[in-house]
Amino acid sequence: MNNRRMLMFEIIRGAAAILVALIVAMIFIFICSDQPFEALRYMLVSPLVSNGSISMNSIYTIFAAMTPIIFTGLGVCVMFSSNQFNLGGEGCVMLGGFIAALVGIYCSTGTYLDMVIAVLIASIVCAVVLYIPAVLKVKLGASEMVSSLMINYIIMYVVLHFLNNVFADGSKGSVQTFPFAETARIPQLVAGGSKLTWGFILALIFTVLVALFMYRTRWGYSIRMIGINQNFAKYSGMKVGAVIILSQIIGGFLSGMGGALEVLGRYEVFLWRDLPGYGWTGVTVAILAKNNPIFIPIAAFFISYLNRGCTLMATYSDVPAEMVDIIQAVIFLFFAAEKFLAKYRQKLVVAGAKEELSQKNAAAAEGGQK
Image (tube, rainbow, N blue to C red; front, side, top):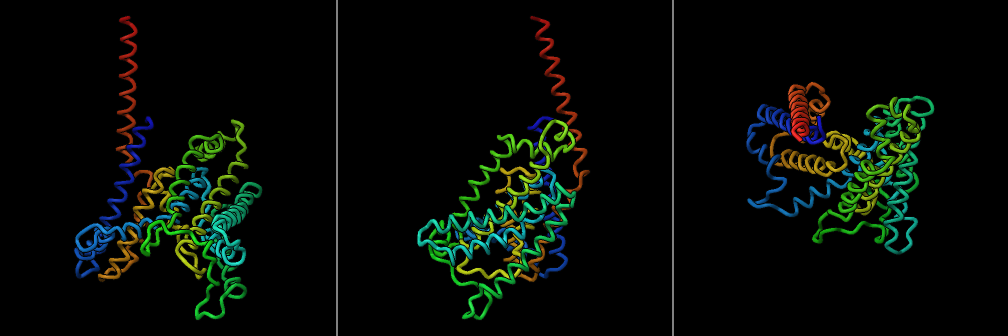
């Protein structure tokens, strides 16, 4: 199957999985709601439409929610492309936000370099953290999925320890840090109280950079080849261990950057008391995008739209917000099902083979006539 047909198949397969997930959600809504059509309106229409017209504030809210999950989606995309199921992006988001907050509080230079320094330091620290499961995988054969899951909770409890006992602002009624320096905060992209920051633009820039890295560089090619067939990559001379480590370091760097931009852009203090969930959502985003960086923003928009719709539905109707978890679970199910639309894929393969054969025959006949 040529690339064009494969791309068309993946788009159709993804759209079908999303459609089935929405149908399942609708069935649950009709079962548990006394006003199902009102609930569906809040879930599917209200995220963009307010008082009968498209609301720009709602669009800004969706874009703001996309920022961290674009970064975690890109990080997961790179790691999954090398067939490494590292789930440490969730902990890196929390750690990246915490490190960036501390830099923004205690290492301020009084200039707007503060935000750059804070984000870079947080990203580098998270890259180093995900170096650990990568090395354990390469040197000891330890499962990167298990070790990265464990690291998430190690990070969470270490952060909570320092937040509670070392860096907490004791004058407040809740556990939080002191406020960041104003120069460390990510500027708003749109005035008027919107939570949309320049981090969104940076997320789009990194989408392009990651796509160029994955499809236009030797290292990106190596990552993808190892993901397709690790033994072939090894026997062809690729440094498999080094590439695996590189992919997970990049994943940690991107996830940490997403956490840093989220905290410095949308908060004045660090007050997360639990894993924020952006890393888990990034896995869903990467799966929806089929590990293609260019599709990450589209998948992130869909998830952010869905999250906002379910929040509005839970607020103004009798359907719980957990409906979004059901939808995501169904999407996972159909994307993971290798037999889903397998017959349609086979038809595309046969049609592609016939088309190529007819083209060859036509070319041969033309050559014979000459």
